Amino acid sequence: MFRRAILVISAAALLAGVALTARAGAQQPSAITFNKDIAPILWQHCATCHRPGQLGPFSLSTYQDARPRAREIVRAVQTRRMPPWKPEPGHGEFVGARRLSDAQIALITRWVEEGSRQGDPHDLPATPAWASGWQFGRPDLVVSMPEPYQLRAAGPDVFRTFVVRIPLASRRYVRAMEFNPGNFKAVHHANLKIDRTRLSREWDEAEPGPGYEGGGSREARFPDGHFLGWTPGQSPRVSPPGMAWRLEPESDLVIELHLMPTGRAEPVQASVALFFTDQPPTATPYMLRLGRQDLDIAAGQRDYVNADSYRLPVDVDVLAVQPHAHYLARETHGFATLPDGSTRELIDIKEWDFHWQDVYQLAVPLALPRGSVIAMRYTYDNSAANPKNPNKPPRRVTFGQTSASEMGSLWIQVLPHSSADLEALDRDVAPKILADDIAGDEKWLEMNPGDARLHAELGAAYFEAEPGSSISPVVIGG
Image 1 (cartoon, helix red, strand yellow):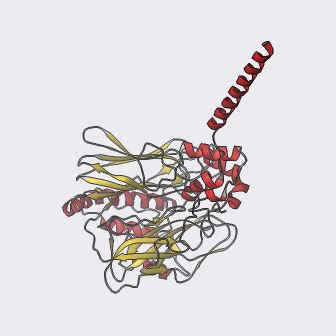
Image 2: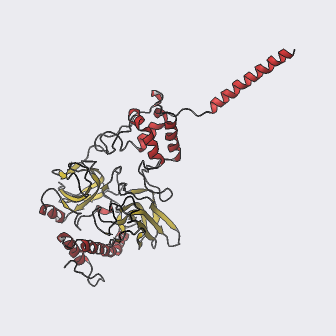
Image 3: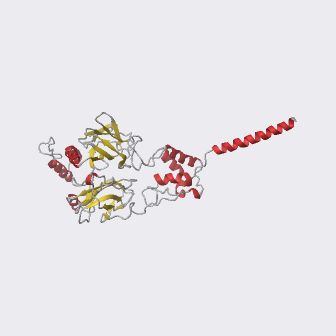
């Protein structure tokens, strides 16, 4: 009897153990695999750059690509070095954000910790159909540098402008633009402007070889309040409905390139694809610029501040922002204070990186009423403790277009609510921009007194200033 009881208890215990084991097995998370879990993340956030023919130094589009770099990938995403997305969360929501969620980072970490398994081939989604050429298909017009520029193998960065005729016989409306640098390794970023005066073309023709040193002339401008530029990883975008920009006949495309020597001579031949629409614009944005151009940062200074603000004379909707600075900047912060005293964040980048700059389009336009104050506050570190300081030991750095100098601007694309408001905004802000341009040219000439082109630019700015203005001509450099 006693023995039978023991057998009954043992059987019950065995059944209970089996049940517990089954429940425990059911509660254990399934294995993380590349095919099921990791490929979709890499394809969405990484392979836009890290695939054959793009600017990434290696591909991450297949398991065979990613597996050897698994631990490198997990380090990059845990530190948020990759994918490169600089704005702080909670300080503006933007289209095309590349920031990984905490859950995605945890998933990649588990995948690596569990051995970086490939998984069932049937779990792998269809590979994205990445465009092999222009992202928007066949362009209506492609404008290219007629010959390559040969970038030297070594030495400081090069800031050079190239002017290309746009072959148009009549006005067209541009709904989208794509930029191909022609050499992903050598081109750091590009600004694209339009010049209808031929002044930029004359500067190009006056200097031997393709292009000329420095930026475009004062007549080279962004069209109709649109950002036209390119940075690594930046995706081309179609203008919102009703906001195509006008392109007039006999215009020149002005391509301002920041070039970085790679250790060997590099040919650079950029191209721009234009996509037209028959629909003329029904709304025209405006480009505001904040920032001081009289920057003068002493050697060793760790907390230099560049602050600026502007009070809006009309109601506007903020569409996009673009901060810009060079190597010494630490934090770039833009915000708005409304008439009721409340604040709205535009953008905050606490770890500025000169190599990752972008145009940030707001996911939802931000309405700012008349009387709102748009402001920026940038901080710079010109000390030896700044690992990004290119000068060792540190030296005095002032305003200038080259990366050996420093800049600090916050470009803000706004949409006024009427054509009358657009004109009122332009009349109000133009003197401020002109005064800042003059201060920048004066500071730049202080460091480069023999630059004839800078003298001409400053003279044109003085001439443009209204008679009776408090801005008075100053002779610099004798």
